Length: 447
Picture 1 (cartoon, helix red, strand yellow):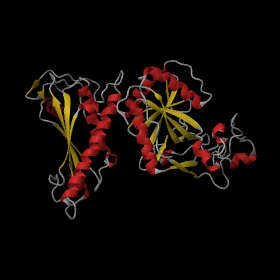
Picture 2 (cartoon, helix red, strand yellow):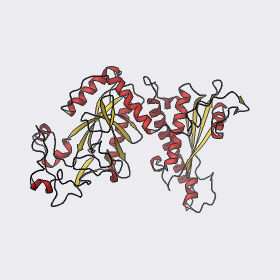
Picture 3 (cartoon, one colour):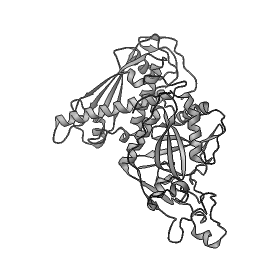
Picture 4 (cartoon, one colour):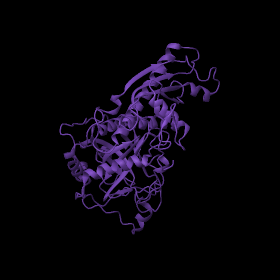
């Protein structure tokens, strides 16, 4: 995309006079400016009987994100205001035909896309500079949800899965209310994405603006997080309260993978109060301890309960949207060899539960972009260094069912220091617990 802003000299018959504007953008501006003629976008590619937006092809999910940015910009006073969005769900013909079922599936698809679009609108709005604007942007829109069943097929008598996927769609109609002259602010603005990196940087910058240059004692990670939360609290609404419940525990199992074997094992730290690594100069340790072996690998991998993790992730997003931060207790490094001593010594705790009930380390999650969570790290072992602070990303991988600093299992290998091999600036973290932290900023939605 060109960095040059293309200014429109005027309009004639709904078309811009400026040179260099894309035809798609001309049509977008005209549709948004000329109520009741709407901008129409088809989101298609649902699998058979599915209404899950997250299972759509990435190109279709990007359409939802693009519409969200367009809507937020309009409601922020820079374009003709969007005041109504209609979503019509569609289904492919079922075999044998079940019109009532087809209608139900089509309505559910429209409802799911509406939820995804509303969530995206509020997320984009939350990234705007300055204090959060209330009420949430999604609540300022008149929504219409409809289902057409299989009555309006794009591909009649579809025979291939590709053609059937085109019939399984949701048509989104965005209606704009004229508020004066239409201006094209940037070439291809609608189709060009605001990069995830930009959104992450916006979250970090907001945090840095609030935290200032305060001196934070980082000797104890939980205490350091508490200090950060205290520093953020004064700028938050005084009556803000956040939901504490993250549901059932989601870290269910642990498994040592290669290069661990009968010959290479997990060697614990010498003690908790003054943790030091095992002495790798000792011959027995140099080949037998994972910390000393010199071999890269996945080592310890945490297993999660799918439903519980999914619920906890969605709750974390809602808590963040409420205006609070989230604490994340994590397992770091290559072993579960450093549980908190005070927690581990708690009377009555089953020995086999210590590893997941006593996280090695604690992070403070300050925002999210899609299924990526932005966290502040007191340990100085995360890869985004900004303003004297360290930040990183936790990835919620829905298909692999994990919440870690590795985007997928192929990125979970670590070196003997416990850092990712694909990015040795980032210590590997696997989330064991999520907790509601303190007040941070005005809410964009309630849970």
